[in-house]
Length: 367
Image 1 (cartoon, helix red, strand yellow):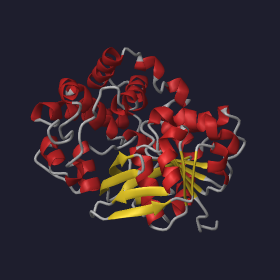
Image 2 (tube, helix red, strand yellow; image 1 turned 180 degrees about the vertical axis):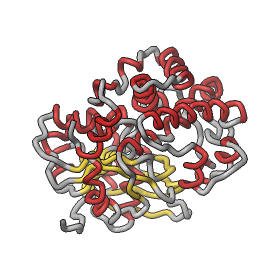
Image 3 (cartoon, one colour; image 1 turned 120 degrees about the vertical axis):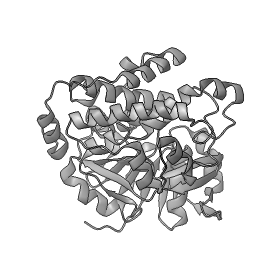
Image 4 (cartoon, one colour; image 1 turned 30 degrees about the vertical axis):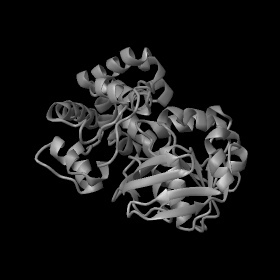
């Protein structure tokens, strides 16, 4: 395989998409930025790129090869496709891009959350994709970053390493040959069960949002989310969620990292307990809370992270009281049944299969 990347397409022009597109373009890679709504990328189109503030404090202008809302145009020349949208949009992206995907392409979900690769593969199939790209999912997003304006982005911190797995796992090394040409921080994970079950956003995002709901509504998020929002009491809830996640992972034969182990690996942040470790992470400083409760930390992480975790636990005999409590709180606040709207086992294509069948599926793609 020729690993000289002709073009990288970033799908999504939100906080993460703009930051990743700008970072790669600033380092000389040819980058196409796609967003389904033209209004959201109009200023970037006019300026021809994105103004980026790096974590070192430098301000650079990153020129983009192409900025478009046309999926056919966005996919046409891409070798590597970085999907950087809320996981609740993965299915729609798969259906939209299905007619234009090519065999040689590597598609990386940044991140997949829980079961992202399963859902994306089924969406491509339903959309009529007759090709066999390599679909990968990252365990988490590489950056702590924010959009700072219509054509501005800021990267606060880059993680030291982020595991990535292909679905099926026999194609992981092939995919990483492309991905690591851009980001050597991406390292191989055993398979997508590991990236899905080490989904740390599932632990940190929805619970902190729900537990700080009153403060968010009163201040429109004018406080540091991972510092002020993490107190000894809220950290206890995060720890309970984390224990359930690790237990569900063990039930399907996966040794998942604890939240504290993850903070140490990703950010070199440690402490006597989870509360101290989160406060010790410099990458969290300066990041404000969501300014509203209608936010992806709920509408993405509940249906695409906690719902499938709870349902996987149920299928393999693990009770998830705390996870289920977070889903129920989100249902009440949003007036939505995320149990029905989320990533069910049917949508992931794993209803009723044994643990050994599940592992065969993720390793080889065969049921």
